[in-house]
Image (tube, rainbow, N blue to C red; front, top):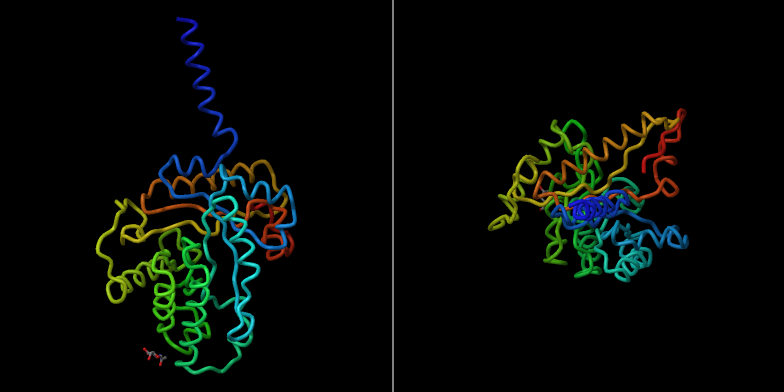
Length: 301
Ligand SMILES: *[C@@H]1O[C@H](CO)[C@@H](O)[C@H](O)[C@H]1NC(C)=O
């Protein structure tokens, strides 16, 4: 008996090991998810220890690069290609980010003075070229990024003020045609809870599904997240949790609970396929550069 007990407790101890060393992707897959992933960026790919951890599939089985069209008809694929190659080397999934975004928009688009028809054709060309370039290599595409205001109205981007909502289906249709197998996402922040913005997103997805992208059946058995209840896939795509410095033990403990809350929310919803950190180390976080005003915000990862 004592010997058997000893064996059992050793087994119990070994079973704990994966949770001691995070192994985020291993645990996500064990919970029925498709991946746990991270964003990355090209300058970081010269950092050996960083790249080694980026390729650690026990933690990350999905990478998110950026791709762009710096002038009309000229596409800058080399940065995206390098990250797709990095993912491929390790057999990791890739999430494309993104086709249409009002921010970091080249001035040839924002100041081009294009009319409705021309801007729609620019959106179509951009989405079909990007998605087509990576056809078969990218599982998920953020086709539309941050198209709502927090009050649920459509953001007054150059796309909306010129085309109305026509650019939304134009972008989605172009992406769908360019890679029929890719999952097409409408990506946004502040929609993880309930409120006017998430309601607006649910309504948009419902209307797109009804009018333009009828799907026969959903494989998911959704429970609570209202997006998943529409029978569409959902994912946590850009996760980080910043804090106002100094990073006290209490704040870090709260941050740990908050990360656990997000992971538990995705875990509880069968339609939620995965979680992607917005990079995995504070060394390369976007937060200090963007929220550096006193008191600085940091320690998000
Ligand atoms: C832009 O053109 C599309 C396609 O013809 C049309 O559906 C949409 O209503 C137009 N938008 C505006 C603001 O005129």
